[in-house]
Amino acid sequence: MAKARVPEPLLATAGWDTKIFKGMDTFQEEMGMSLRTKLYFGFIVMISLAMVIGGVAIYAFYNTEVQVEKSDMASTELVNVAIPVNEIASGLASNVAAAGFFIHGYAYSGSEDDYRRGAEFIGKVRDTVARLDELLKSLPDDKLPKSRQM
Image (cartoon, rainbow, N blue to C red; front, top):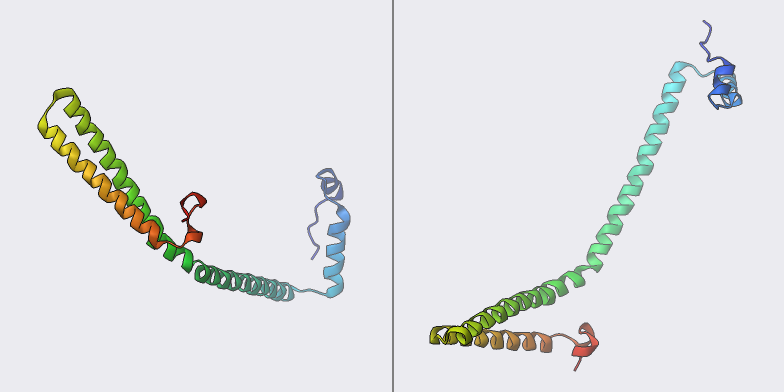
């Protein structure tokens, strides 16, 4: 049975090097590769590639585990420092805004209720600043910015 071949001028006009295709045919003919051999060879190549990719995946998982163990300290620092600081900062911002709103209302209307509520929020601001100072004292100096080190 004759093999169906692509005409060489067509391959050449498409930019393909016809020597490559001739070389493949010659290699297959010399090796006497039957369909069975080609399939076995293809499966062996696919299994080899799967094993290499699996090895790379295992190596990547191992490195990820090592990085997670190294970052445990960073996550502990995040939970113990960054989250309370953000909570304090948001409370401070909202309490300062509310105190300013009520003090402005007192200055505009002279209402004692606005003055009392503004004073309550100023008290909350003082409490928040005290909490922030306690948190800063509990941190080691090397974790603070240079301006906050004692």
